[in-house]
Length: 331
Image 1 (cartoon, helix red, strand yellow):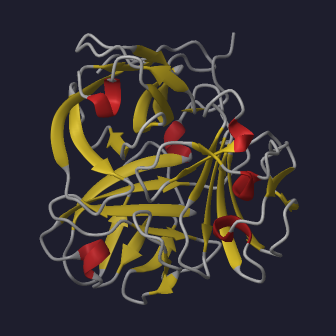
Image 2: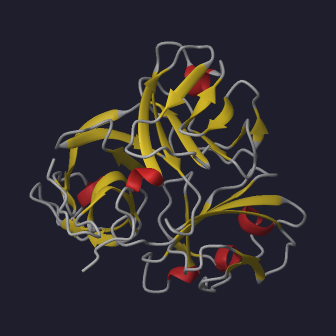
Image 3: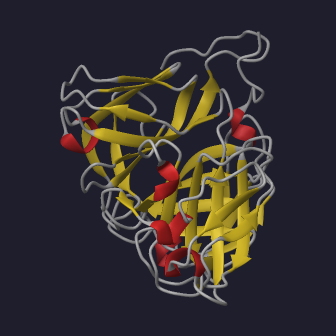
């Protein structure tokens, strides 16, 4: 029995840590496969500064900030090239300050891996439909107005029992709320998604970028869990050993917290960054990354409040079992 169609997740997603040099800096990935990234997300770990996000659809040097509403801006000294197995940086301090430590999270656009980047122009009218190339129903959609200073609208298929009516914002701590203006109370399909007339997703004549993710067995999982308030916390089955995890409590105001296997190669996973914050990395007992999912190791309300509701996005280091029946090892 095949447990995954992606035996080597590093062909589609990799985490890379590096130290800035303040000049030209060619970053090469170290996964089992070469990865030519289409979406690069960078964050300084050692000091407070903004997240910077780049994609091949917008082009080299065009950057957005996950923790800000700011429109897309051009910085010729930031990410200067997408490579065949990495990327190249210039002297821009947000991405490459000398001696500062950084982490990068990197995705390849591929229907096989359930990731699509879509650019579109708004018309200001509710019910605008936008085509995508996933050939599957998106589980998560993250949309940013490239032209204007508006929040990042987020759809997650496990965000309440009627997720198409709900919206979260990546740049804020806001709890989920019923907002028809973002996703038009319309569930996405395997060929298109629908937006309302909100400025964050469909301001007339303005340009937008949408990151769409569909679950792929053994590679990605976009689910939810309920906290138990105990350091012997909830176990969440993913079907793989996680490489990257982002968690958001939805029933109250909390950060979007990000963890990965390169900043913490051993359990307990401690180093935490927040997508909505410029803060430097913090360190707490948070999770164990297991061969088939993750387990809460904290009583913190941000990750494990008793009765709290949480959504997550996770990508694999290794599938729990490969297509040829080889099991993942524990950390």
